[in-house]
Image 1 (tube, rainbow, N blue to C red):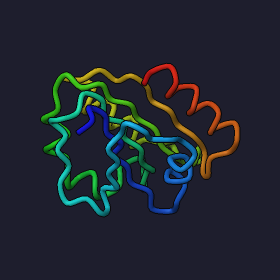
Image 2: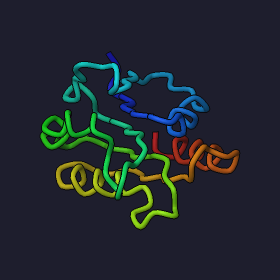
Image 3: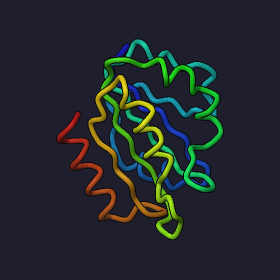
Length: 133
């Protein structure tokens, strides 16, 4: 087993669109819509990708793994996701996850992008991943 995981949720395909542009070699990949359990404790680095729902909250599946997320300690966490800047809390799910996970872990990056990823968004994400991973 690797010490790196990608955990993601993508309802409309925007977050998955960015995921599909990166080569996740060395990562265990979990779509939380399909994964019943995720062994978070075995990973040193966890990258989380998600969209934002409603007024800036993570999608419902993140509430189902809330206790596991809260229990994480001394992990390196990367956050990325899609959103719509017309809302008051643009990519607010990432901000909430940063607050929740940043208490006992190191947030190594947070990357927000608008709607479906453009070539610019893809390029920026790949540069971030090259630097931190």
